[in-house]
Structure formats: C-alpha cells, structure tokens
Amino acid sequence: MSRVFQVPAGTSASRARREGPAPVLPAPDAPAACGPGPARGAIVAGYLAPHPPHLIYAENPEQNEPRSRGGWEVLRWGYEELRRRLAGPARPDVLVVHAPHWITMVGHHVNCVPNPHGVSVEPIFPNLFRYHYDFRTDVELAEAILAEADGLGLVTSAMREPDVRVDYATIGALHLVNPAWDLPVVSISANNNPYFYSDAALDEMETLGEATRRAVERTGRRAVLLASNSLSHLHWDVEPELPEDMSREHPYSQHQYEWDMRLLAAIREGPTSRLRELIPRHIAETASETKSGSLSWMLSAMGWPDVAGEVLAYGTIIGTGNAVVEWPGRRG
Image (cartoon, rainbow, N blue to C red; front, side, top):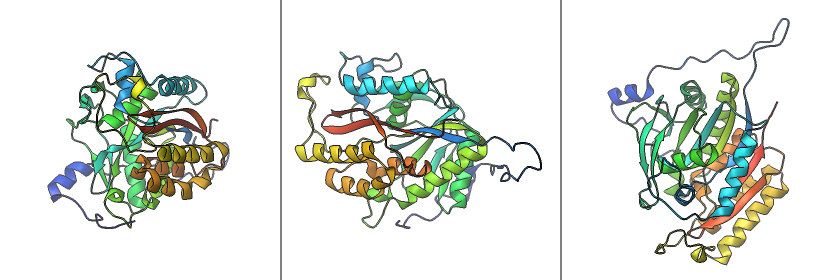
C-alpha cells in the first residue's frame, strides 16, 4: 500500500482535538479458573449495501425533501428482504458502515460524535437527496476500532466535531438497512489513496477489517457490517426529465454487465476467498466502486468466510451495477 500519507496531519492542537482521550480497552480474556469467561462479541452478518440516492428518493421517506413516483423496485425489494432478516436471528446491537464518500486523504477516520444530526445533500443529485438525519453513535466501539487499527499500524483519527455533516453514502446505506434508525451506528471513512496511486492495493483495507473484528469481539457487540459500494460504476452523464423513468434504465454497457455477473456468480458459488483475486480484476474492468475498499474491509473482518454469499437483488441505477448481498456471520 502506498505510504505517501503516513504522516500526522494538522497542528498539535488540532490533532489533540481529533484524538481526544485515549480509549481504555479491556485486557484480553484470561483463561477462567472456573465457569465461562466474559461473552465475546461477534459479526452476525455482513451486507454489500449500495447507497445510490435514487433508492431513498424512490421510497419517499419523510426525512427526504424531494418526492418521487417510485422506481428501482427490484433493488428496493432486496433491501426489504434484508430488513426482514435483521428482525430475526441477525438482529444486531450496532451497524458498522464503511462508505466511499466520506473521503479522507490522511488515514482512516471514525465518527465519534455521539449524536450526529443535520441535513445530508448529495452534491450531484441535490434534486433527489436532501435528507434530515438524527442518529446515535456507539462511541465505545468507534474508539475501540481506532485503538485496534492504530495498534496494527494504520494512521487513524477520531472525528469529534459536533457539527460534522455526514455524507450521503453513509446515510443512504443506513436508511435503506434500518429506516427506523433505532440501532446505534459506527461510520468509517474511505482513505482514498487507491484512487490516486497506481501502486496502492486493498491490503490496508484488510488490516482495517481485522481491526474492526477485534474491536467488535473485545467490546462484546453483536455487529452487522455494511459495505456501501456499488459494483460497475461507469454511468450516464445526462439525467432524464423524470429521474425515475425506468424506460431509461439499463446497464451502461454489456461489458460492464457481464463483469458484474462474473463477480456475482463467484459470490453465489463461494468460497469467499476467490474474491480476493477477482475483486481487483473487476475493478480494472468496470471502474467498480469497490475500489474504495468497503467490500474488502467487510470480508476481511469476517475472515473471508468459507461460504457463498446470497444475492438478494441486482439492478442498475443511471447505468451503474448495484447488488444487495448477504454473508452470514456467527449468529449464536
């Protein structure tokens, strides 16, 4: 991974404000003399959860100002099924999301603001997405992820600015997965070295995934992880007069579509370890949004599970490929 940005950012005062007090983590579990030890947390499920603002727009939630006539129903039905599953054995304590549009050029940032609230606006589609959000952060888990990532050699920073505006990718994925907003959240930034340096790879995202897993286990959380990525990501540059006009919606190209199907076939067949080589090839062929590393982060946190993923839905949005996919974790 490129180390261009492996230097502290800002002044000593600004760094102290971002870092805050050092989190105190529990010591590793010692063998118990008698009886069971403390309960360990677990990742109960992981989801590829794309965030196009069109899906929020189409659902007309009260938090979003623009109104629509629907659209993109198959993908929205996939999210309905995801929500149904989260009401069952995979009901978590917390949702942890990595999204590509909270871009940080220096290190991996984690939102530690206890109650982020405000209006999130999609900069390219403000006519579709002006969303009023108000949610809770699991600050203990957020700080644990920072501590574990720092211990593994990653550059990290805690976001503690109370007026932070949360990006639309984070908000979009969280709304579509849990529109009731009745679960606490941890949101992680996208350190976008890979977008600018050809020698960069996804190995650092795997390290971040390992840090996330360790933090989940040490804090005793039952966590669901959300990788907020689209697949193929070339798209139209002219919007139809009616944005939800489904007669205008189709893959950007046959080449993009076929590579999405190739990746999804591997996901459906398993094992997940096959994706470690296929994800970079898919990125090269389709400009896939997985280049930001969200999917690699999530699968690494889950230990590249030796199971198939279940594709709940696939569809295009302005020509980009989007899939809602579930990987089961430890449900016990």
